[in-house]
Image (cartoon, rainbow, N blue to C red; front, top):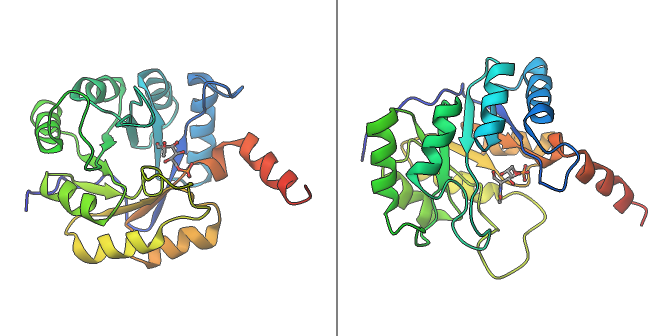
Amino acid sequence: MPPVLPPPLPPRSLVVSCQAAATSPLHGPGPMAMMARAAEQAGAVAIRANGPADVAAIAEAVRLPIIGINKTGDRAGVFITPTVAAAAEVIRAGATLVALDGTLRPRPDGTTLAEQIAAIHDEYGVPVMADVDGYEAGLAAREAGADLVATTLSGYTGPGPVPAGPDVELVAALAAALDCPVVAEGRYSTPEQFRAALDAGAHAAVVGTAITNPGAIVQRFLGAVA
Ligand SMILES: CC(=O)N[C@H](C=O)[C@@H](O)[C@H](O)[C@H](O)COP(=O)(O)O
């Protein structure tokens, strides 16, 4: 197995994802930097953020490590940091770790995941987190050199609807099989689910929508009486 760069995340920790869609009033580097500061103040150990502008603003606002992603292209395909050039943009903006699509799907530039990870390691020396959608992809991502494997894309790449809850089973299966940290991510919306991920073997968990998307929180409350 390829060597693992040490993760800049303590064990059993909470990472807060600060991302806002273009349709949100909170979209943009200023609001995301404030979200990140609030998360830091409350005890988050790292921030996940999208795009060089947000990463740069957050890097100025907090002292925490930043998991940088750079979403580009069509959400139906590989869109989370699909190329080394996309990774380079967020690394140069201040990301201490880069996350990229770690599914088995073909990549838009025709390179392999192993080639992308090797290029990021060689050129920038930062750890790489592979966002996977299943067990086989998790094993393959680790073989390809990923330093961390995250369950981020579970439930998002198949034909069916996105499940309501998180995929804790995938966390448990990957944590039992892999020699690198496994990060739980995707639809963690309660403290109990967060704890369940850690108890299943996750090194850390990333929570986004449930903490940093007020629009989704309002909708959840209204949904209870609709
Ligand atoms: C599938 C996809 O595009 N996931 C994205 C990855 O960065 C984000 O939109 C999520 O908000 C993030 O993974 C955190 O997950 P949640 O918001 O469910 O806590």
